[in-house]
Image (cartoon, rainbow, N blue to C red; front, top):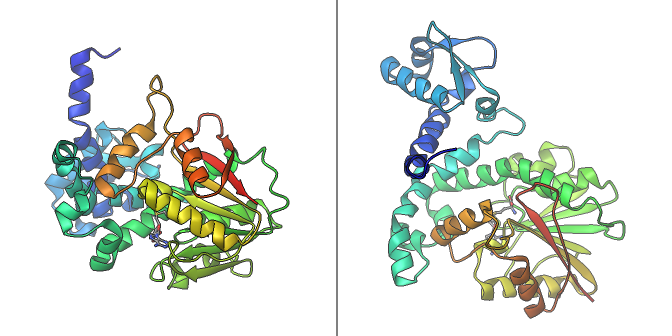
Length: 340
Ligand SMILES: C[S@@+](CC[C@H](N)C(=O)[O-])C[C@H]1O[C@@H](n2cnc3c(N)ncnc32)[C@H](O)[C@@H]1O
């Protein structure tokens, strides 16, 4: 059991660990290693065009935090955790590291004390002069980091969402529309799990412009899934059920009500909505949602919410809350709403 001082020291230096991890993704280090054959710093440095002495010290630190293992001859292999940072791993988290520890998101955090002091939630504006989705249009590097990170994180999240929905009957849903569904990872996971479904992915025109980046094409599901470029504040395609994964947390309450109202209008009849988010639990439970909420404070106008807060947003937009679903031990949950 850590002492109080050890606990505080560990938290103070937490950023060092995430930056040491992320330097490996930026430099392509994990992609040059595997689980079995040790490789030494000079050889890796020559391949990657890096300084061998400083690279050795970085690799040694990555071993100290459990991402690599070092042998007595200075050779390094990936641990099971480090393996998840290879870009080619099927559940790779490399793109999420590149986003969260990359230059744009890193720069936001210094504004946190000032925002809490003056009550204006606008770190992106303070740092870059505009909000996050405008920044994706202004900075191609940020757009690439963001879209890839969303797909990368979706692997783990799709499993949690499918787990949460296991006891839910969706046999009457024929057309599922993932609103602001990014490159369509979540929609494709649902199409694979439920063969009777067809899918629509709505997102901003730039995000769905390049078929090579879209999961339905990559997975051979393009016959069952179409992409629509549009604006969820104006119009969504007609469907029987809608998904909103990590969308409402991007926006304030008024904006969320506007999105849910647009969906209700688009449905043009009875429909269901599945809100997939990190749901904030009660005060007695420490939870990742409570940390993610502070990231959302830095990132945009949104926040993480409790189940009761989602129920209230649904009510205000003309939906009724049906149920909250969560797989045991999962950090994400699903709030189900319906309208007639
Ligand atoms: C946090 S990401 C989540 C993406 C996806 N649902 C996922 O979980 O991977 C937010 C998404 O909202 C999209 N978006 C932002 N504003 C939008 C709008 N007005 N209409 C449609 N999509 C929008 C962004 O392009 C981005 O793909």
